[in-house]
Image 1 (cartoon, helix red, strand yellow):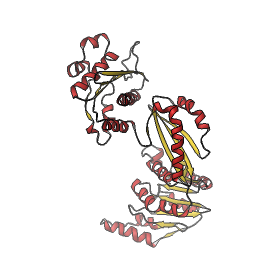
Image 2 (spheres, one colour):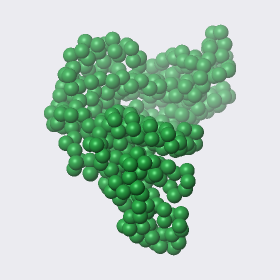
Image 3 (cartoon, rainbow, N blue to C red):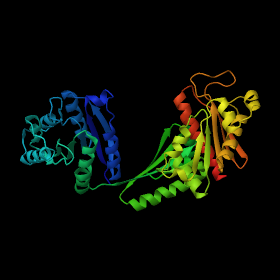
Image 4 (cartoon, rainbow, N blue to C red):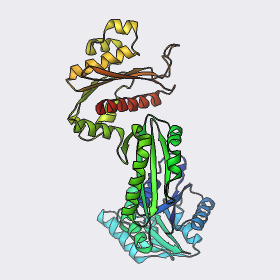
Length: 415
């Protein structure tokens, strides 16, 4: 089956200046993927005539579908409409239906339709007018030289409305679309290159219509299996079969699938086993609590936390021994053990998790450089610990500490 290719063009200087984040292209890519369209390129171009026309020309030469956002306002810096007319070698004329819709839009809001706003009803003669039910900038649909084009406003909620109401249904109607099936395997505790070594023979034997991609993030690596065909059920079955073939190779590092983030997986495990948890966060400063409570329903298993940043709070609130702090130091296996055990007892929970370390960028010593982190998880007096040696970047260290602490808790629950 033929691969249907799409390109997304986002227009606006504000995108290139970094004043506005281009969430539109990201969202459009996801929606196209769901209906079997492969996005081959996303282009961001400023408000410059020659650059926009070049983007149109290049997109039309390599894609079956070109979706454009931005540049449709009524002011002089909005160039998309006149440049589309120039690109398609046609004139611009008043579309009565567009004018009536604009007039009704403004009347409904008790506002007068100005001459400037009236200009939005003038459209390229080769386009099909598509009503924008959420705003004033009209959608414009073209079909030229075997390529489908759609120009939409850059305002996200207006663009999404046009996509859902018109573009996606029209593409389904016009095109014989393949099925693109994805499965994500989420791993933790192993790097990308080590995973690749474990999976190299398995990957070589994948069917020709199935591809593996490595998607590394801070603290974890996602594996994406993508299959293309015409039968969703068959692709799903084939992907599951390949998944079970790779699990014996990497199963110890797999924590979840598809949309299951680590906090979601932790929540499911605690609910399944009817267990509860409390935290004592020093170097992570509450970030671990934030991740756990980002999951709806976390109040059923998360009892609370203490952020004993100062040693005096470790002593007064968590009853960490003064001698432990003096002899081993706050950043030590001995200290995190006491923190985890005592926060579990204090909150009356099944699991106590603790963090202590030197997040940086200062505070390190020769024996304990910046990035030295200790973690502990206690369950009924059985305490497991882990030492990390991370970076000099404070934000990175806090995030990686929280991820590692969640994984330690996960392994303790499973044990």
